[in-house]
Amino acid sequence: MEKDKLVIKQWKEDERPREKFISKGSDSLSDAELLSIIIRSGNKEENAVELSRKILRAAGNNLNGLRKFGLEEYGKFKGMGNGKALSIMAAFELYKRMALQEEPEKNIIYSSAFAAQIIAPILKDLNHEECWVLYMNRSNTLLSREKITSGGISATVVDIKMILKSAITKLASSIILVHNHPSGSRIPGEQDKIQTGKLKAAAKICDIDMLDHIIIAGDKYFSFSDEGLM
Image 1 (spheres, rainbow, N blue to C red):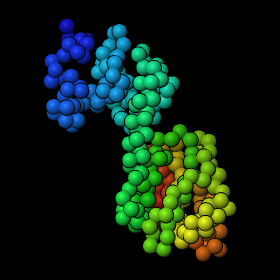
Image 2 (image 1 turned 90 degrees about the vertical axis):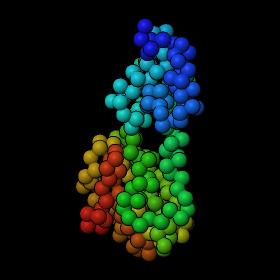
Image 3 (image 1 turned 120 degrees about the vertical axis):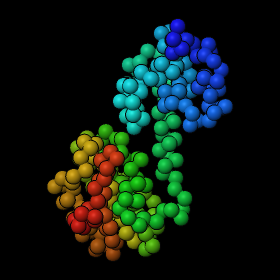
Image 4 (image 1 turned 30 degrees about the vertical axis):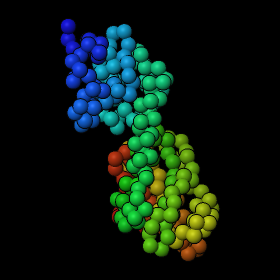
């Protein structure tokens, strides 16, 4: 009988995912083995590792693909109840929050790439559009980031009054507008350009600099400032 078809407890001790993690470290485990530790058990036909491999195959053998799975996707696999699915989803949420918790001295926005980096974990995998604003002081130190609107799958409306009210309340000297394109295209549409112009003009009246408008599209981004559109 092949090892994969055996109950994991029947494997050699140093090949069991949990024991292997302890004795050899997390780097020694495959993605499927790590996932099996989270889900703990398989079903009548598959052990936890084999079930994990099947789930990963459905995600294109890509953890970024797996991050997009919800309860409906996990529910298609025998033995994957809400409890197991939520454990995986919670692990990804913790990773996202960790990525957002930068050290204070690292929160100086010195480029569009850095601005995209600190907000991308929130936006890159969403299947709907969200609009966020980064608020900075005169030293370009990030004061806060705030979700302004959450829209449909193709567009979200920028609330200029709300953005400027928040900027004034936070005593921000500059702002960066950020939103995502669920389609995966980083190219701005005409509405993106119009909203950028309106917000930049309104911010100038309030003595607030709009430094950039960044579009997050999966692992790519578009910067209005870098492209000379500001």
